[in-house]
Image 1 (cartoon, helix red, strand yellow):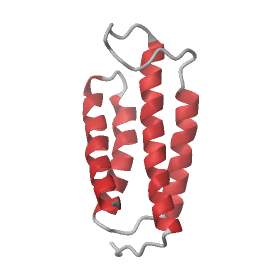
Image 2 (cartoon, helix red, strand yellow):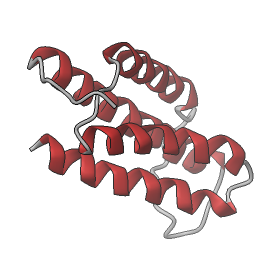
Image 3 (cartoon, rainbow, N blue to C red):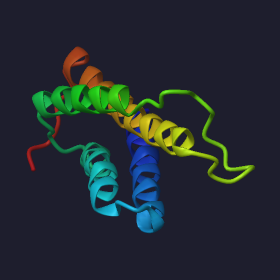
Length: 120
C-alpha cells in the first residue's frame, strides 16, 4: 500500500514542480516540491530514509503552510482568474500542507511499523 502511495505522490510532486515554470518565483517553489518528490521516490524504491529528516521536513512544511495561509480565504479555483493574492497564497499554503502531510505519513509508516528498508 505504501509503495502505491509513494509512487502516486512522486508523480504528483513532480507535476507540482513542473507547473511552477510560469510562477514569478519558480526558484523557490520548484525545489520545495522536488524535495518530497525525491523522498517519495526513495520510499517507492524501498530505500532507507532518515525518520529525523521526515519529521523535520514535515514540521517545516507545516510551519510554512501556516505562515503562507492567506489573510482571507477565497479558494484556489481560477474560474474567474487570479482575483488577488489570497488565491495565490491559498494555493501555496495548500501545497505546503500536502507536502507536510505526505512526509508525516512516511514518518509514521517508518517509525510506527518499524519497516526495514534497504540501505542505499
